[in-house]
Length: 430
Image (tube, rainbow, N blue to C red; front, side):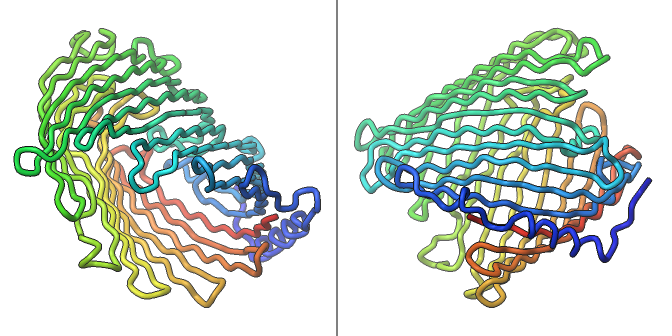
């Protein structure tokens, strides 16, 4: 049975959440190892007209209580940012959708003072939650964690050595489970041949993804090696232009392709631009970053031959006025989804943040996504928009409300749908 949002439901739920969140001295603000530890507890009520992200458009009202610990330290030998929390979700009519979601994250970074020879950061994240998987148009329980390290060491005035390693493990209900290793080492040798630099890289990737339940022969088991070398030039603004050539080896299961090929070996050629494309000295109110390249995927989906594709990211932030900020973002990426199929995702976003007085701000976004699945011929187009209002009543209490819209149009009728999400919240920080 579907439940329509009631005008009395939202304020009643927020008042109830506020009563639950009254201060308790046991969770007061604390200082731990020269860092700040806080607890933020949020009560939220939302009405979602499409819980599964598909044409069935099944809706309900959900009540959420979400306590979150946050820790921040920026002193001594490095910076630490950590969070740990849970979200208890209860649905008004569809009790089968009730869930308890958990999450944790940690980032530890080395200090980077002027002249430091080494830089690096360690990251860890864990998530166990139920949410919409847009690859299949259903609510899926997914549990996963990932960890990694990236760093660099300046071995000499002109030589920089780089290294990274990461590991991820994801378990999904009804869909493919996946583990993945990624690692790489490289070097930059700068300032020769009239300001150019020489770069060399080796990258390794290993992917093990289970078959979909009831679908034999659709697992992924791949290992990829890639070597490359090339030239780069860094402009005074910080923008870096580079070109490289290399070779890529991929070993895979015969069942991953219709032809039964177990290898995909080919030369590679890359062009990249990275960094701020608008000099801060000339545009002090603008912050820009840009990355675009021509590359081949290092993890391939089913029946994917790893064709050369343009990928990249662009972001631009403009502080138009003291209280008004505008943002623009665009990206193009290749990825292998939860069904082991490759997709190419293109997105464009526009955002506005407006400060109203000293305690209230409004965030608005609108954007468009285009997703293609080359192996199936499926094409999706999604328009997304949101409007959020938040007000800090004092140092501890915050209230807010928001609305989000998704309009999905697809070559498959299952993914043709509209979604409206209205929510309100109360938060208290100890």
